Length: 423
Image 1 (cartoon, rainbow, N blue to C red):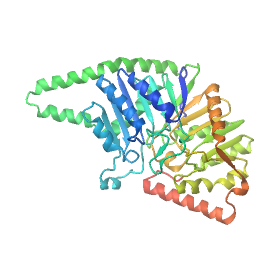
Image 2: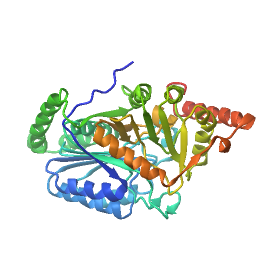
Image 3: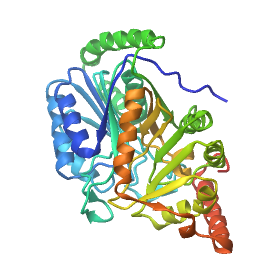
Image 4: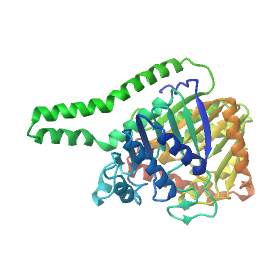
């Protein structure tokens, strides 16, 4: 088993609630960019927040900043033509992860493995990580205008860890782009009549574009090495889930938090159908006397999600786990805390799609102040929730059959998606 991500210190981390706090901070950081901006999102839209961020990105590119955007081909499918039109000729490079603009794309292997990360890094200094897509919290792609904003969170991080976030965004952008930038330059170079002059021009352009970045990255690497032994607040780790080297890294962080928890474990999660390992860890924590509280969806955007989560209610409640359903609005947040120091904010749900298929990203924070801030957010969210009591949970043969059905659906879905293992 791989070792857990080692936290490093010396960070500033600010919790952001909803797009109303995230998008202005995002635009401010982009408008101050000097060298590069990396942006990754599952969903982008055509609304006012999208327009504001897009204009900030275009403005940065006009100033000579290297701007690279990657969006998911499924999550961003409705808005892609709008974005492509507005970015044409802007100098911003937009890559699409697993596009589905042709019917045969659905036949390609791995199409159900999506880019679910929400990342932005500016100059390797400002990093934004969380669960908030680039769409107004009061709008839903399936339900239209909402009467109340979605509950969601992100973090604004400054410190050496921002370099890890930048590297992750750069890798997924490169993977989606598939060498296209280099291919276009190579094609132009080969077709140019003045071969030597053209090669010098391209080399000069490449050097001008990268010269300013080399010093920045060298300084960031030195800062990151120093931070590995830095015990100052705030200590944090950036944790990925992919289908190569980091398949279980996020799950491993949750397992560690649950198995080491002594007093409390609080979770906010919209799509909840944990692996057998996580379910055992949840029940084990409750059996040790840890206060385990789950804040789950009460207003469901997908009926299967409701069926999956509720199939587990009876067992969880019987073991002392407290369950609340958020009814004030749609729930999209993915945050958790344990005891007095550990907390995480990110894009990963606790369900088969997030834990075994999608590309996900979380920040894990080891800090009493940040933990307390997450705890206060949890308590505020409970004001819009309703407690689920054992009498209200499905019981008997019907509940058992529903659980079998959910397990079968989950395994079938993973087989179709090419999942590497049983759930």
